Image (cartoon, rainbow, N blue to C red):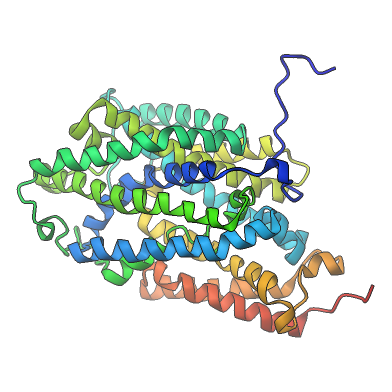
Length: 455
């Protein structure tokens, strides 16, 4: 008999289809996406649009078009595959690519997700540190921890966020449902309170089209592509198979719209206004740390919002990273994998560089991880039509798929060469790399892979 005090075992169906009895209703997904994407990244990205010289047209129309494209991608690409398969990304990849190759991908996936979660721990820490003068807030130029007090705050927050992620998908989704509505209201309040304090209400004076400190300018195309592809790893890259496998119908993919238009539209614009006010008050000495910016606008409620905003992004990201690490070490429990992910995220959170360079970082990690989603899309929808064996590794008993490795790494290698030598904005290359990966997988599968034996 299990003692009454023993913790309940949370079954996340990491290596099997999600059964019908475990499927979730639409509220779980609307709340999760609203909470995850009306979140900590928004406080960082809004100011970066001003710093990178976006114009008013770039921001208002570019974000609108880019977010529409993102929602359509979730609804018509990711959600149908998720509800057909009801498998995690990592389980499906193992069927296609084999155990050894998936281990490499899972490691890259998990580590990059930890860096993203770490940026959100940084965001929350800027709010917790406001009442304590000894906590020095990071700025655009900071890369390393700003002091001992900063480290203490980050470690405490990282531990708490990891504890919630360990509890499993249901608890992660529940936290997002509870936090999302009032977080959005705080973002709107920040915008409404800030507007009367600005010297000019003319959008041209807010988003001037002039980059700060010699940064390269991001224009309309850059804003559209960034808004569409900042979550490329989740939709094009199929990471959200792990979330949407619980959806009863593909139509639940529309839930991504809650995050895109509450968070990646309204909240980004409101966060831009906060930074515009800081620039008006302090000029070159303006801080883009979310905690101080929000506290000066709406006080303690704003600080609570910043803490929860970082929290509701870090939780599902740590959850995904834990699944990835479990894919690297199958005997590792999901709980242990999540603890490892949370520990790495907390360490990354000590270093403000990930949060302060978020525009480039999310473009890089999306372009590195998203192409593998093209392999899944080809396998699921096109394989038999183009002469490719579906679930090749599972059908042949192979542990390594060389076609998948070459199709993934070659376009990514070209991306890094272009990024490093020509300084091309990472989001410009995400879709070309994704398409190239899918096309190369077809070519290499037909030329390099042996056919499975007839039954």
